[in-house]
Image 1 (tube, rainbow, N blue to C red):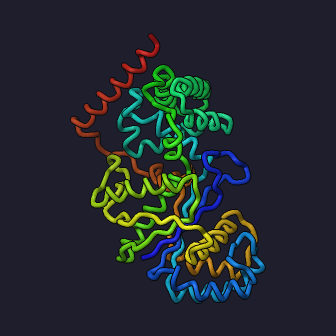
Image 2: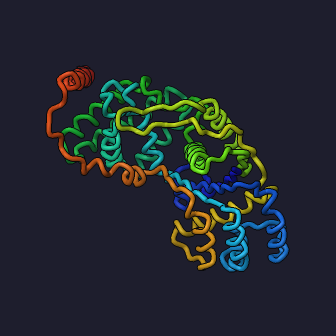
Image 3: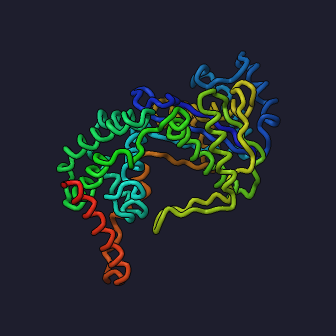
Length: 375
């Protein structure tokens, strides 16, 4: 299986560009190497359009529509499959804050089961409710801070700003848990390690790397479903993130054969089918496969943003996307995935005594930590 990856909406570590609130990754997979089998067709199409390379953004709907039928036939013949992965960048700032500050391994006022079980998704939405755009920007600025002392000061102020809003939460238990966790983080910012320390660490929390994780998981899922080994992964070359993307892919490659559980009721990360080949970073004008994924990603983005496209381009998209996958890092994506928690029935019997004792001990430990703050 051959994989070709392009991205759109890249603003780097800037998450709050109103013109590009979403980072898109497009993944096009095929059983044959598109750099070889698609090149004759693309050469013909370039000549018909009078261009040296096919760039969807430059050609627009009208001119792309003239070549759509031939691309549809090629896609069907070669079983091209397109997957769309997204990161909603303003949401990413809030999710990053929660993952760092409410990690029970660092914040002693957060009980283990409120972070490492599906209860975390109830809590993350309650925390997100406290944010507006200004506080989300402050959270991201502090998260990117490389000076440890400044990061600690910024986190303390942010936690106090959020504490002033806790009364907006409708239920007493959420107010109790969240105020305790924020208060603990405000008084112990060095324990939270909120800043990144250096530029390379900042890249690891960028939406580009978070989205690239999705890409690698999707490649593994498609490789497993199609029972095909990944022969090559071709990524559009760009200087800022390619090195970090390569390091991430290498780390996942070394985890092949392992599985990791986040906790009871939580997803299991299966690394057994992660690609065994490293990404190849190639200029977009030197790969027929990248040329093709650029076209489909451009169409997908227009569809997402509800911009007009022709029927022919819509057919081209769905020809490739109907067997692909889609996923996103966002609060809406979490809501869709975990909303069923709201409809689970109440337990009909009490917890086993041993388990109840364990939860009682966790709660007493949390209360002691919170009480110590008042002193």
